[in-house]
Image (cartoon, rainbow, N blue to C red):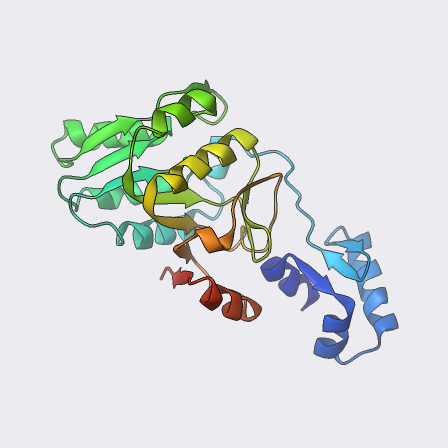
Length: 251
């Protein structure tokens, strides 16, 4: 139960665990000590926090196979939010790439991308005559490890465009910390995406919910919709309602 709570919330407090487990605070501390020895959490004053094993963003080829089925469902559910003639920006990520197969069902889209993989897939569909939209590649410094553009040049480029919907990929998603990611360049570009969009949509599979990473992209109050493969933690419900965040569970 402690590990599950950490997975969803990112942190737990000793009084909360005492109430949920109906044991003493001494027993809770012993549980936390044992779990820390197993490297399943990190103890902090008053409770524990989730251990983020990855300190560096995995390479694209590795990310591509992580939670692949969940990402496919999330991508398809996110694509269903797009209307004909929309102008959209797709953040770099193996989840947003899963949206592209569904874009061929839409008419006269304009799709902005930073991912070279997404660009190649869209170009393939365009050349085969199954995608009738416009493709815009957001220029900038190329990250060869992750096959994407980012940095100041990409931010300046993106500032010239206004989009109907921005689809942002979360590396981490927490109630208090909001959307976080591994790299500051990508976080800052994500902020520009949100600023230039009428509607902001965050994609986060279950491994991202409750996690927190180096750089903050935005707070939950700046998000309109979250698309995930799981429902939000029950404890998040009042804040999500207060911040007017709609949470979609992809099936």
